[in-house]
Amino acid sequence: MKKKWISLLSVLIISTNLLAACGGNNSNAGTNTGAGASPGTEGEPVTLTLAGWTSSADEKELLQQTLNEFEASNPGIKVKYEIIADQYMDVIKTRLIGGNGPDVFYMDASEAPGIIKSGVLEPLDSYVTADFDVADFEQPLLSAFQQDNKTYGFPKDFSTLAMFYNQKDFADAGITSPPKTWEELLAAAKKLTKTENGKIVRYGFGAAPELARQMYMLKAFGGAMSDDNGNATFASEDALKGLQLVVDMHNVDKSSGEPKEVGAGWTGEMFGQGKASIVFEGNWAVPFLESNYKELKYGTAQLPTVNGKQGTMAFPVAYVMNKDSRQKEAAWKLLSYLTGKEGMKTWTSKGFALPTRKSVASELGYDKDPIRGAIVAGASYATPWVDKETLPTIMNNFNNQFIDAYSGKTPLADALKKAQDTANKEIEAAK
Image (cartoon, rainbow, N blue to C red; front, side):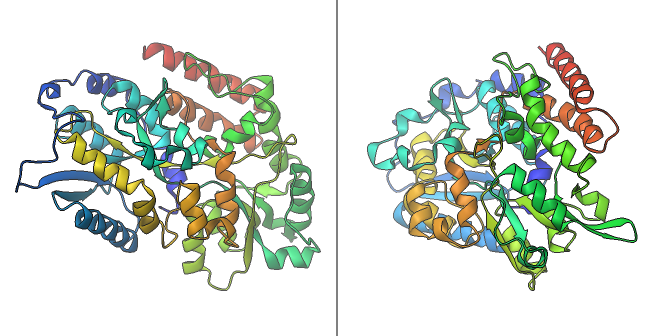
């Protein structure tokens, strides 16, 4: 996974008109072989296309190993793996519209509702057999790819947010254990904040003031992102209660800061540089810290409770099937292998990504790992980074205004009211 993956999510925009065009692309439907079709004629192997992204040569090599194992056990199927390095979703949408989309491809949770609504994905429920063991998936991760009681993707990997804390800073401040409640976090962050010559040089807490990181806080007191029609509702009193805690930590307590305030690019870097003692980060931060800050001594823990409730964010990615694939049986064989216990075990064996199946996480020991255990633990109760198909519009307007509230330029209620009104005008105009 990319170390800045979550921040990059905020630049992926779903075009409503483009999706509508996708939904109307049925010109190849009559040529599909369908679920019951044979993977290929005798002696003639089927070639499937698999599209995705990669963040490193090691990750690419590991996926290729997984595909080699699949091909070895399915000699009638060959897989052509295509890496889309830039503008992934734009490329996928363009190819789907043109009728030459990949048979199987990666789908990020935040993009799923719009793509599902466009009608270009194959529902997978009819392919599932008992031995696939759907109940083994962590339910919040699976639900991100379900709509109207149908499943359109099975999650291949994920990360939640966990609390990363600097062990030396904690020891110096006399803090013996990571905070378990928001109130304890506030107290710890105040102790950990360091000032020199009247200037803060290290924040107790490093924050990412964007919706992808704050959705669970918005929901902590019963707030909601949107209503059943996809209209934004994030400016409600209940939503403000959780978000106000984030804003006050920066503007009132002065114990929280964002990366740009200390010259860092993201909170993982902020933490590695010693400019924040606590950050909420995901699995992608582990190899980053190990590679760039080898001397750093840190631990992880589950996020502190808010309003007495355990919460965090989850960022799952799934494999999905192109509805216009001409080799659906073979495509399912590939998809079910990659998200099955055997394929997932290989793919997640080195920790680049974490398994979405409980049994695989246990078998590989991630649930008990001193660093990754807290990340895995959050999967059962996490808020997935997904909402209605209007999420991109909601996200852009929220982020544009929330940063003004976080920086103290605008009261939170005013900022989010403006963001909500603008988002709903744009949503209505797009209908």
